[in-house]
Image (cartoon, rainbow, N blue to C red; front, side, top):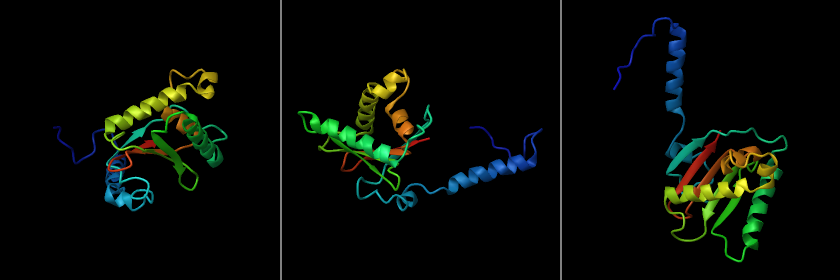
Length: 174
């Protein structure tokens, strides 16, 4: 364990040191856990309070026409594709938020996506599906980007995946 200094390092101004300390303290004041649940009006209704979260650094910028309508159409198209299959869909996908900027993926069957690893496997499958889209193929990026990058291109800001019972995991798209 390294020892922390209480004074600025040589060559750095005290003002920058104090600004850095203020930033660290401010990060500690950002709501998390139960406090963040109060700001998540979807937790407890569409999914349980997320037990874990992570951030994904997007590798592409949103498309110029990324808007609410395009996100809703994306979800509608994915849902229609699943409903056209001869098998019942294993999960539901829908967009929420004032601008439909929050994607929610919910398992429709008991024990389907009941661990973080199974949730991540589902997201990996969705990456394979995203790479087969005409958009990725036309841009010749199908081997570089992920499902999260596709969502970022559409302007989604977060994804919450849940087993529909006890487990939820959130990914912030940044």
